[in-house]
Image 1 (cartoon, rainbow, N blue to C red):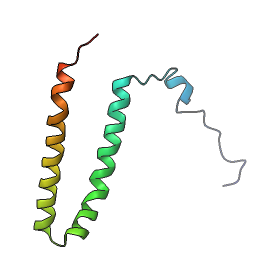
Image 2 (cartoon, rainbow, N blue to C red; image 1 turned 30 degrees about the vertical axis):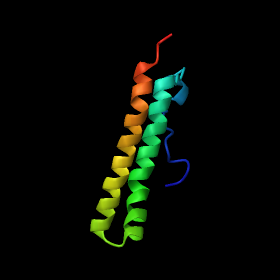
Image 3 (cartoon, rainbow, N blue to C red; image 1 turned 60 degrees about the vertical axis):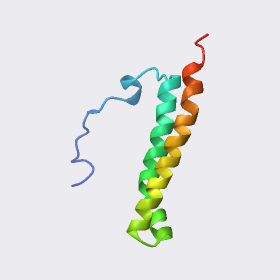
Image 4 (cartoon, one colour; image 1 turned 180 degrees about the vertical axis):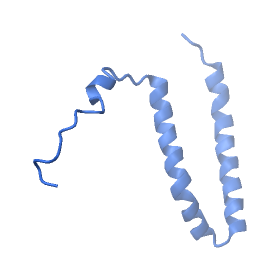
Amino acid sequence: MSREDTVEEPDVLPRHSDLENVKVVTYWSGVFLVVGQQIGSGIFSTPALVNSGAGSVGMSLILWIIAGCMAWSGACIFLPPFLLRSNS
């Protein structure tokens, strides 16, 4: 096909500016964006590192359980002060 044979098609997709005029990131949506990125990157990169360092599947599961307990205890430590703070 030569260049003369092609037919110019109109823009089928809308322009980006037509889709959304204003983007708003609130405090909580920003928090969830950061948390989602951290969890998403950790899910795909961390298991390979843990498995290569642990040496066996059983040891890597034990390490994951220990890390989960440490994360849970950290959350339990910071939860009471958060619940006791005033909203003023």
